[in-house]
Length: 382
Image 1: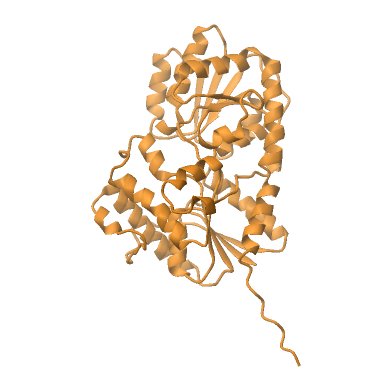
Image 2: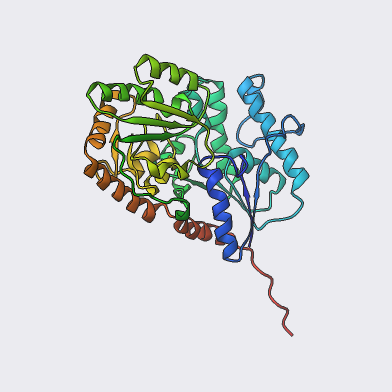
């Protein structure tokens, strides 16, 4: 079979889907499948001029809204680039972004389309304070899910929690399949080490949705309780300066290192002890599985896909979102007891190897793809 993996971000972009799909391609090609990757280059902006028509709602009533207009222009750009670059037919198109999915179905209506919805752009914008819940931008972006449901041949997502979230916007949530992300174990190499001072690490985009303000307040509380630690923050984003200022105000200047963007943080993580990220929402939270495969103890907020990865007190600790005191208490447990955090990290590693292996993803995707396997014509009889 010949499969096109249609992404939005290029494969070199860090993050769950962009970093995972090339490994999916590699595994399928070893099995003898044909598979290609496609994405929109950053240089392609403002090129598309074509007409856009949605089947389930009238997008033109949102025209004039900055965020909606940008989204629609990106759709046109993706369509322009796709029409320019793709000249062959595929047996299946597997899209990993709503724009990629809808463009592919517009241009190749006869090709079976599978869509994996990895995250919610509208919820991220609400949590980051960019749009109002229930406002025009929110209504527009939420309406895209119903459009995907009608146009795609198969909808998938990455967690039971996120399927429940999508259920409020589609007619048949029970028809949405769940395939959690998977990771190539060879990328992750746990390293035996003995840090005299516990080393905490978080890896994320520096935006309000990730709850790093909560983390800094929790670390200030942890320090007041008399515990030594170092917090390493890998990632960049619009609130970096704000977080650095907050760290100084909380007296954490000597306890935190801001690294900025890093392409392969999994090469760095094994040297640390505890991974912590108190996100306000996560569809899956790939970085938790990655940290587990690096043999780190996990501490996260009890939201979305994080709660499906962590069994509280068994392979990590869950805390309520927006609660720096509870987060400080959880961190205190793992900072003060090396054996306890070792046990959590061991069980996290075991669970991640079992539940989030790339082999499992390949098996599940192969089943999905084979459901649309083209019927080969029979040899003529004589």
